[in-house]
Every structure is written in structure tokens, then in C-alpha cells.
Image (cartoon, rainbow, N blue to C red):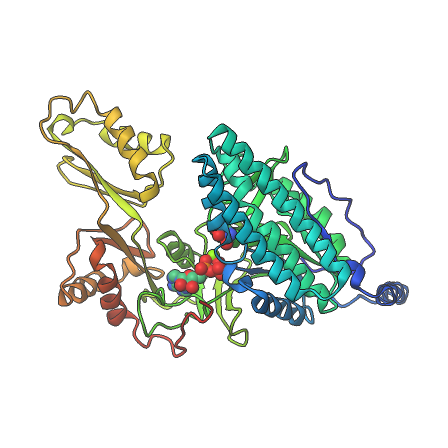
Length: 531
Ligand code: ADP
Ligand code: ASP
Ligand code: MG
């Protein structure tokens, strides 16, 4: 969306009934400048000239990028610099570690542990107040932020009290409690902008992102979201006010708070990007871009200059934390470019994620691994040859909402083996035992088994699957370093070959395959700088 002052105004926000904590810092823009802006627009219209059109960029800043006062100052500087050439909508995560603490408080409430809940909220209050005090010099802004914080903490307090009383943590209450971090950080970023003379407004995404009611993994309803975003955001951009939106959260059409899933602010940014027809979405993090492999696991990694949506999605799906797995979905149709850049080294170019992603003929682009998984095997003579085993197995995984990351089947149909995230393993295995109870009643040994000592390693690159030799080179590299492959899955996706290894060998597998395919693949060598 290109924003030009056409005189057209969006209709007033049809706000959700959810809680609103808007911090209006736009009054910090001197009235004279507003007048001048309007005057120029009138002159331009009279002369029949087109006002200069600026592109719209959605800039998302993750938890490490807003971790303390200095970080928030850096974020405000980046936004201010960006405003020279574009209109900006900022999307902000909770300060690093805050969502974890809120989830811990929610769980402690369920356990009736008042003391821990009190301690966590005291820590959070002290942390945010300290940042507000060192960041904000204007007395009026400080007062406003203090009021907003008080409201947020009061709400957290009553949510936890309710949970303690009921000794039950509903998914709805968990979402409301874990949403508080973003509602504390966005006003701080808006205030930092105001301190720099940039008009800004903190906006609760419950007013913008309309979702279904799948608490903990809510999906946006894009038509309603688009309507809300245009009505609420466009007028602010026309007034040259930077909307500073909470990431991670949304609300149902009825105004009930939801979250998009852990690490979900990346997804918030592309949802807003798509809803506003943004020209680009920039995800600012603590790394120089998408790297050839997680820098916490392998040294000598490089920054990838450009990759495709599909490659980035495969990396995210198989555990590369730099992007939430659903991030690419909202922009795939429009082809909006996504950038990953480093808040701590903003001079770097970063990685551009595009539809075609600079194809280079089946080369391996990056590696990733995921260890928080469990392998479940369904087998046994009681079910050998039964034609409906596959359908019953996956109906069961669907019923318990377990994401199946990888599937393998022996040719004799004796065993079906699949991998799910650890968090869903227990309920999946219980449901399968229930489903196949009759078939396996006479078996002496257990035939629905769980193995949690595994990891998936994925080799990602457009068309790697069609390129002869990649699997062979992988086997050789792993055998040289004594890594045993439990299973390999090649074929379901053109841009990924994934294999299972013992969890203890995951790092060795990444080191071996990185050496084989990616050493020195790009000139720019990088590291995570913000941690
Ligand atoms: P943010 O707080 O900005 O959302 P995250 O911690 O969610 O940041 O994601 C950034 C982290 O992702 C990096 O610090 C890095 O350790 C990790 N990561 C994993 N795989 C990759 C990869 N291939 N490229 C870049 N970073 C990666
Ligand atoms: N604050 C949320 C989390 O920690 C969302 C995010 O940071 O993207 O999961
Ligand atoms: Mg993240």
C-alpha cells in the first residue's frame, strides 16, 4: 500500500470489545508541523500535483530487540531512520523472557501457588517500570505509560486470581495472561519514538487482528482483519503517526483475546503486511539474516542473501526459530518481500525472502534441526495387513491436534512410524492406545511405542530432492563422523530432504552436513550478536 495524502479518511475504528490500552503520543508532534503538512497537501491538490508517494513497510522487532532500555532506544532510532523513505507500521514482541514468565505465572496460578505468582508479577513490574523511568523524560508521557502499565498489571492480577480460585487454567485465560507482555512493551516503544519527536501510537492488536477462537494457535480472519486495519491504521499514517502494534495477539470477532502461538509476532507482522498491502515486511532480530544453520549449534555459518518463501517455510517448519512457521502464509499470494535484518547491526543488508528466492539449480541453501520431538511407532501382528490402520492412525492424530512432522512406513505395513512435537506426544500415544485397544488386546508386547531420543535434521534448498548425489553425499558425510541415520524421508517435498538421527548426534549431524554442503557458501560470515 502506498500512502499518499489524498484527503481520503478511513472510517473510525470498529474496535473489538477487548481491552484497549492505547497510548496516544501523537500530541508530541508540534501543532505547527501538522498545520504545515495540511497546508502542503492543499497546495499540492490545488496545483494538481501528486504528493510524493512513500512505500509502506511493516517493521517487526522481536523480544531480544526490545530487551532493555538501550535496545528500545535502538529500535526507535531504526524506525525514525526508516521514516525518511517510507511509512512505517511497527510490530513489537514482549521484552525477552517476559512471555515465559507470564506462562509460568499462569501455571503457578493453576497450581494455587500464590507466592510464585506474586513474585513473578513483582519482577515484571520492576523490570518495566525501570525501563519506563530511564527511557521517558517527558512527565506527561511517563504518566500515561504508568497508567497503561497499571491497567495491564491489574488485569493480570484479576486473571491470575480467577485461575487460583478455580484451580483451572483454561486456554482462554492462558492467552489473556500471556498477551500481557506485548501490551507492556508496545507503549514503551511508542514512548521512545515520542521522546525522539516522532508521533506514535501504541495499538493493541485485539483491535486489528480478528481471529478464530483456537486459543494458543489462532488463525486470522483476513477479510475482517483487513477492514479493521484499513479503518484504524490508514488515518494514523495519513497523520504521519507511527502505529506501534502489539505482536502475537489478536481477538475473536466478539473481542475475546487470542494468541497466534509462541514466537507468533513474526506471523502478526505478515498478517498486518497482507492486510495493509504493505510493500515490504522487515523482521528485525538478533541475527544478520537467515543463516546457513542455527549459529548456536555450528560455527562458521554464513548469511544467505536471498531465499524463497518455500525454503524459508521449510526451515521454519523444521525448527529454525528465526521465523514462526506460519510467517510466509499471508504474503505468498501477493509476493510481498520479507527481509530479516539485525537490530544490533542495522547497516547489514540482511536476507531477502522472495517468491523465486534466487534459484541456483538444486544447491543446498541451509540446514535445520528439531529435537523437541517424539517418534511414535504403531505396529504389531494384530494390525498387520489391516487396511484401515493408516486412516485410523491419522484420524487419531488429527483428533488430538498433533502436528505430524514426518511419516515413514515399512513396505510390509508392519510398522507405521511418525514424528510429532514432544508437547503432543503423550496425548497422541494415549489416544492411539485407546483406538487400537481391541486389535492389540492379545499381543504380549507393547506395539505402540514412543522414542523421545531422536532429532530431525533437514537439508533445505529448492529442488534438492531432484538433484542427484545429495542424499549420497549426506550419507557419506554422516558416516565419516559416525552418525547413524535412523530413517530418511525424501520425496514429500521438492525442497527438503529430512532424516532422523539419535538426539545425541544432532549437532554432529549438522556439523558434518554443513561442512559437506555449506562451508564458505556465502562470503559474509555472521554470528548472533544480540544474545
Ligand atoms: P526474536 O526475538 O527476534 O523473535 P528469535 O529468538 O525468535 O528472535 O529468533 C532468532 C534466533 O533464531 C537466532 O538468535 C538464532 O539463534 C535462531 N536461529 C535458528 N536457526 C536460524 C537460522 N537458520 N538463521 C538465523 N537464525 C536462526
Ligand atoms: N512474545 C511471544 C513469545 O515469546 C511472541 C514473540 O515473541 O514472537 O512467544
Ligand atoms: Mg521470534
